[in-house]
Image 1 (tube, rainbow, N blue to C red):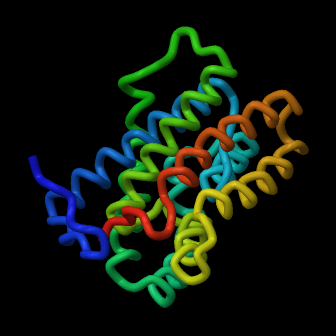
Image 2 (cartoon, one colour; image 1 turned 90 degrees about the vertical axis):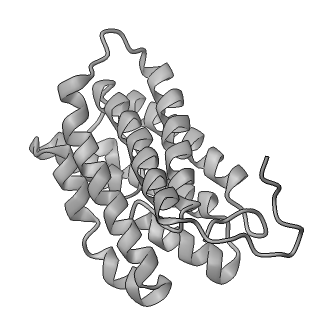
Length: 207
């Protein structure tokens, strides 16, 4: 069994294979969570939440909206977090968009209670995002800002993300019934709890 490096010694960088599988698996987990949110008529926070709002309002394809709303953030990511992070993030978002478009062709939920959907999808999305973060990438948008603030000021990425998510979900009240927004907030809490507890400065961050 491979032993972890001693305290204070930097871990070796991820291999290309490790990064590829991390982005593939992480984006798949998040896409499955998105499918659960979508079928329960819920939404989540971040730029994914913005894409959900546009999807519900305009009925445009959700996957492509998720890809499009993240495009303006890549310039900031390139300048603030470097080309490697930016390219990995671009790949993760592109994979997520493809998974979101493809999964409904292969999978549907015959029975899905909205409370279970909110909690389970939130936990699953948080786990997928955590995998992606640990391979020095994000799912774009507000996630880029959250990672930057954690690196720059030590603010927990999950706490920052949760504050942004709450604002987006409150803004959804004009489009969705209050109960659906409340359940969506529950899902966002579950998602960001996973990130806040498991992605902290001074612990394993990935390289």
